[in-house]
Length: 114
Image (cartoon, rainbow, N blue to C red; front, side, top):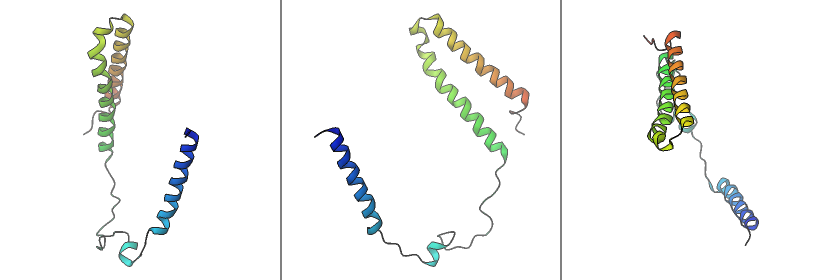
């Protein structure tokens, strides 16, 4: 059996199962299920509270520096086995760009959170 025939059989089987799932499912809507909160409790206040921008800044800074650490650690562990000046200079260029970005954030006041 060829790959084209097998993929056609799989596509047909998935389509049949997808269509049958709509017929087989039962839906009994009632007042509780159609309400905003399915718990049955009336909301006390608005659920869409405003989040302070400081949490977003801390999260973004953490994400940026965490990803940089993910790049630095494996490269630092194999840099001496590569024994290449180009690899070492690329590593230092990455560290210089990282330091310049940190200094830019510091000078712009992004790290002054409070």
